[in-house]
Length: 190
Image 1 (tube, rainbow, N blue to C red):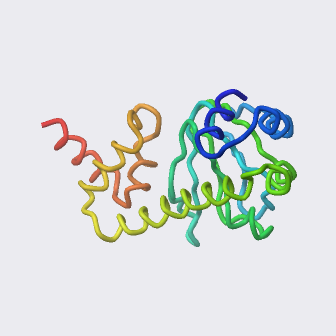
Image 2: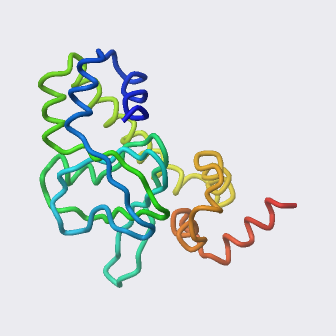
Image 3: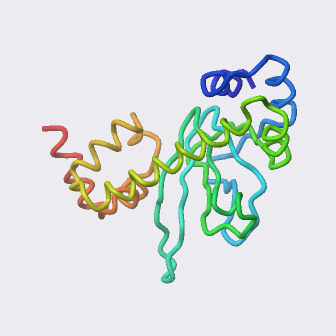
């Protein structure tokens, strides 16, 4: 829990007692490679903090093709936040791409944090703002950056991603074909 505690201390002012109580409401869980943390059409009652590993958020289109929406790595929070906050069924699947160690933060812990942490609402706001900014930037980049610029930005955000994620998922994330990704990788090596 120390890793989560350190991240929380960076985000808000929180006493040791508050930290202990809050993290006591959470639990550790390890997901094997390819395991689903959550599935579409299910209700979402947990947020995950990634201690080690990488998770992809994906959605299937009407034709059954899966699309990588985004990735989450160490020291990040991840969930289908829309489904979590509205208590509607999820549209996304969260999948571990390698053995992934998480801290599971149940809705009851989050509700407790809002009610009892001095800066609980600030913490929730900061996490929501980070997620909004990330997704807004992601949409903007899909429409305003070239594939090469998106590729370079991805490598900056997710160092070493090529050793952690299958190439077809990276291509999907970038909105390009695997063949185009191979060309971009070749150009980057020159």
